[in-house]
Length: 398
Picture 1 (cartoon, rainbow, N blue to C red):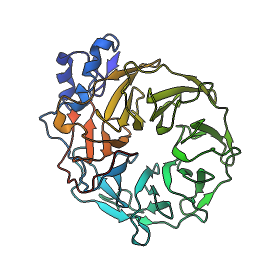
Picture 2 (cartoon, helix red, strand yellow):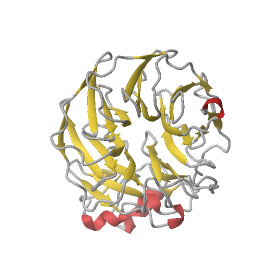
Picture 3 (cartoon, rainbow, N blue to C red):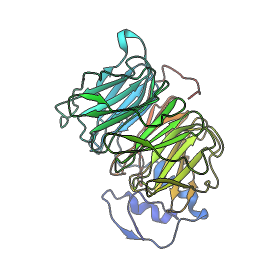
Picture 4 (cartoon, rainbow, N blue to C red):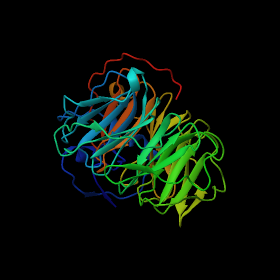
């Protein structure tokens, strides 16, 4: 088995091999075992002495974080109705940023969701106040810190706050969820104009929450706040057709949703034990539910994200330890320890959003508390945090 810098290690003696900077392969025999789990976060949470990047600084709680596909930009959505775009050069975040307010007529809407188009030219933003979704574009996607300007809104908008938003892999469609019927809206995009496509044949039956396209863009997963909790639709560029529900439904409201990069597993985290559930997805159908990780982190999950290589799943939680890491061996999940090697760089309050860089070399967490964002470099440890100013505490209610 060949490991790269972001693989998990079983002994401290292996760890220094990953501190050398450039990716280098080395052989390692064996499989992750329960005895080795305590080293899972050592590659994430141990502070290192070499130069490390500083996380982008914000002064308000972060509800959404999103890394652009080329790894150059990070967008942060905050409770004050503003989003911030920071450039990243592989070593540090820019000291300046592009900041835009999406608050309508001065009202304080919250930015609840963000999604980059694949080429970095357009950022979709979901907010709590009308118009509920906004789109921001730039003609200078290659600039150091591009300036984004608001695009024309689609003629048909959601009628309630947006909770989730996601671009299709080809950038031709964007989907969003809301708290009012039809709960899920999909728009086509030609680079200039957004046009709503017909509603699904069967609508979600309750408030829409998270939404995510499958990696091949042929399916759309939508979570909702009541049974059956998970809806998956096939999509042929014109029609959204609901697939049959899984044989075993999720046990509660899923507040986080992530599709594995190979499209074969759909993971959900929520407010009911075991807090993390995953389903096989094969041949265009929701398959069997995977076994519950043992042990599982026993508190409400509000965000989850698969690593780009499909080996790890990170979950953000409402209560301590606030973040959990699971290793996936293709069959089941192993719960690894939290980043407690250096408590200074561990989350201190709810983690609301998680985003991996597309190359899997960086992971950013957004949330609330004294530290609003924490960025990790798997294999090299914490690459942030940078002092954050705590101005607007939020309750622990997702």
